[in-house]
Length: 289
Image 1: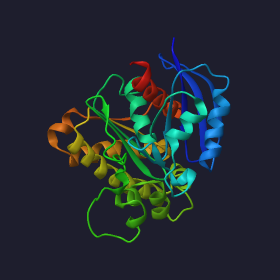
Image 2 (image 1 turned 45 degrees about the horizontal axis):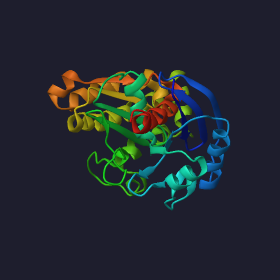
Image 3 (image 1 turned 90 degrees about the horizontal axis):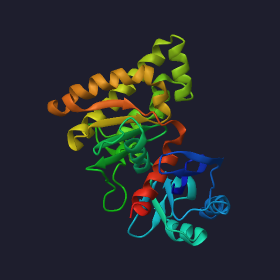
Image 4 (image 1 turned 180 degrees about the horizontal axis):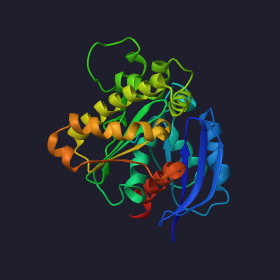
């Protein structure tokens, strides 16, 4: 059975593995994230020396322009675009399929997750930021320059605030830092813990954030008409406080016929979601051809 090399370059860690056509993950390795392109490519090349594969898939936390092969991933490699495809293929000597992490997540979900077999899926990742993977008609939507799905910049309404300039209105109001800010605590994790201990202020901060998440998700459902919206990311580990409220309010706000046919579900792929998405990307790009 054919295997591919899968690489998930995250903001804090690099995950590498071999993944076969059934989705079996083998030889998984987790490393601290490289902070230069050269260090990340070295991690990839060192792992690949013992791997007998003919193609690789890679996802990154940023923007990948398939036309130029350049990537913009400021959390990893700084604010400048880097020649990612050329560097990876030169180091490995095999073709490498590359996409944003949000694109990888939605591919993985439609392959082996709660959206298995579906062709119209939206994956909403909510953590420190917000990213959206879009599968429409079985095809990942990436836009003219790989920016499609940067949904943290969606406009939810007035008034405009200066802090929206940095990461957009939806992300400012609905990602993890918003939870901490509303509760006056150091982190979203602290807010979740306090809410579980009965702190009403913490619970209200989570509920308000869930309402903002619902607004954005309602817009995505109306515009994209997915069969399923899959929720993941660090903040959604508090799904016991968020999920039911998001479902109720998103479906109240969205287009009414779409509301009747769209499911909103939690991811079931866990920490391997990125690796499975990267592998699926390589398989769709090279193995199936």
